[in-house]
Length: 233
Ligand code: APR
Image (cartoon, rainbow, N blue to C red; front, side, top):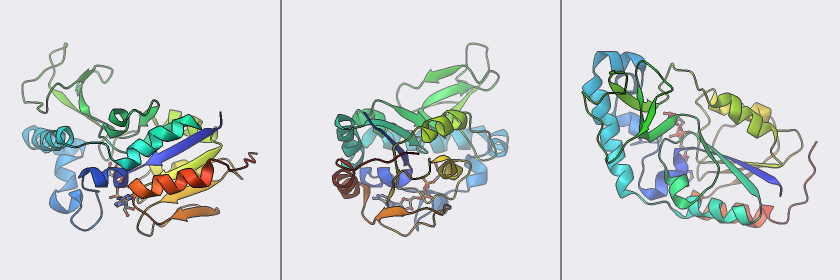
């Protein structure tokens, strides 16, 4: 089977009721990024950071995967689909996608603050001050904050280099290193971009634009790629 690699961002979860980050009324308009999504913010006020992610987790538990997530599952009938997501939600997994790599961490997980290998599932929505790892340190959200390394980037690059088709869905492509993945898309393979708005693409390549929301856009993508002759180099 041919490999379809899909890079997703918050836009794919918008129709599930999740706010994107940078659109007007997006998440970063209502919160100070430095206070809730940086190591400095965590050092300053752990309670505020925990509460921010607790509220998001509560929202996630009420949300359902939408047609965009489901369409990517349907594409597994035709392709080996690998999703690389910047999203911290688990809507791809809940829709049934088999291969999902999270670049920016996972909202439903917590990790130790003394040993980053110690990662735990969170049951329910709340992570509290005083919740500790087995080594006795406070647990933090398992999120890659601004200023932190992106450990899954190396794997994401390897996956991207093996793509036969590459699709980008619902991301403004302004956050690095994730946006830099495009530099690793093999030459001559087809690239598609699904987004209802204009996106500035940091790549000089011929890209097929699908100006639709993810729910409809993934269906359009499917129609375009199912019978595509592939010419990889
Ligand atoms: N379907 C598809 N795309 C959509 C939809 C929709 N229904 N609604 C909005 N979009 C698009 C917007 O047009 C925009 O291009 O989704 C994109 C969202 O961009 P951002 O808000 O910048 O989110 P994202 O690219 O995922 O952010 C990257 O930044 O804040 C950090 O760690 C956070 O992972 C996040 C990263």
